[in-house]
Image 1 (cartoon, rainbow, N blue to C red):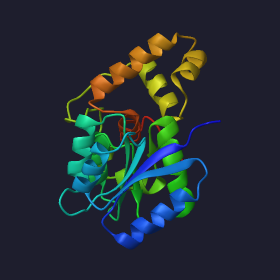
Image 2 (cartoon, rainbow, N blue to C red):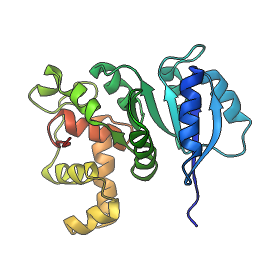
Image 3 (tube, rainbow, N blue to C red):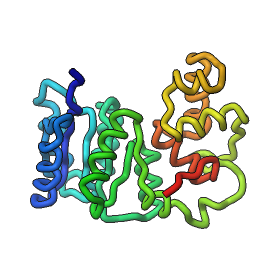
Image 4 (spheres, one colour):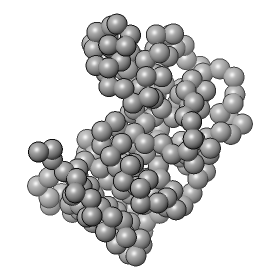
Length: 222
């Protein structure tokens, strides 16, 4: 039998946290292993547990240690944990910053139960989840600038083959599936993926998807 997705939750708003916890506990393939009310509390509980969560649902604004600081600590010390940001803000700059800093997803707090569940499963299985609201937030004048640049706004040259691989990554195909579609080896796909990460300055798959959307390499349909 397939194991449950191990989930952690960090949010200082008690009613909101209890509501999210209730949703998680009602899903047969979810297991809530840590509840915390801020970043410092989460890290303290993480150090005392025998198993790491696979997905962390994390509020942006918390006392003691906020979401940005917590995300940085997780990327340094626990890179296997995939982070989904929970926020009331849909600002393009904040969304871009969090995804580029390694977050795997960004959910607005007014999302519904189904979207939350979908986000957790997609992040666990595919490494990213980006909503139509996030895509809309990214459609700004900055996103329409000519030329392809990395996260430091330095122009980069991406080959046609790398663009093909990037589009298939955005469509949630695995490396093996991409290799089959392009008639290349899995090792070659790995090489293209690593080259894309290096060229773009992205930390993970979510960052690559964000990069592709911002530069109109890939369009996510609502």
